Length: 499
Image (cartoon, rainbow, N blue to C red; front, side, top):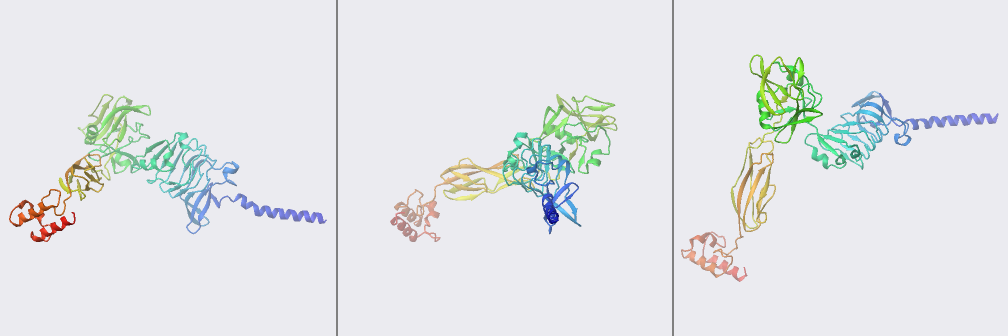
């Protein structure tokens, strides 16, 4: 009887222990919503981070974590309040078989090993809000070939091997326009074997600035196209611009003048992209677009891979419209009946036009200095609203005259040199100043022979007596505004002092 009571007591104690221990085993997260596990970062600030949803670290038991397509929202409703998702926790997606993942724009950090050994993830976009990424975050993700980072300043990699595995994947990092050099030199990010700049957008459509005189921006793809090489939608011409109505008020079908400008200010290279023939059109700044040879549709599509026919918005007559018309051997413009169906390559006005320099001047064209002295040259770039008004400075002989980035000219030795200020916006304009450096004057050397001696005294006497007028200014040795016996005494004192 006592044995039975002891057994029941033991069972109760064991059950109590299991009850107490069980929450510690399964509570790897604070709560779960729509299949996503979260830990509360701050109850006061109502912030969360995503964590793994297995009973323990997915790195330790190897169990399945997340899989398939995962979308993480910016906010989560829990226990009567909305929380903001600000982070991805340590090992959150480790050992997962996720095929795609959408991260929220509220994200500020991704902790270490968050995506390590994600074997099925092939592409990932990191929001612009992210500022910090932990060690080994993307270690051993063999299918990850494309990573998009939208932050203009590369997020800080806080540990080793954040992206080091990307070299084995032959992966490409896509970065915001104008941020390529920053990422290529940033710790962790520079481990990528390939880099590409993402094109900037207007109203959700990518464009390329070819540095055309008008500032016109050309879309990276045809109207209705899914890629740069896609032919897009063949449309019948209409005075009601279909581009303007569907892409937004900033976009339109190019005019004949836009087409002429593109022809006259760019190089045209017949080439192939994604197996499709067409023209790579390159601006003077090195940027380019690809115009696939989509042919023309008149009942059926003809001359695919042979003709680049594109609508303009400029009518030639009631039933004829100007078009861009080119083949592999020539590029020009012509006209076509409005009944035809052609692709359109949209254009937009530059919201922030790149205004190039038209001139540069210096405040002085000639300058005379003594050794040891300096003077500041001022460069003025026109027009006054030029986008990039900075200049670089150079000297033809730095041993005689040097110049710093602020235009301060320093005289180093006797001789002459030419100082040049040049524009940096690609216009290659310049202005020059000729500089002569003279030996430093010696106090008391009124005849300028390099010595202070009896000859200088005689010169002062001659000036007092009415001669040597070419030395009058130098003879006021003591600087009292008069030339008299005091100046002679001053020179005598210099001679006695050995100067």
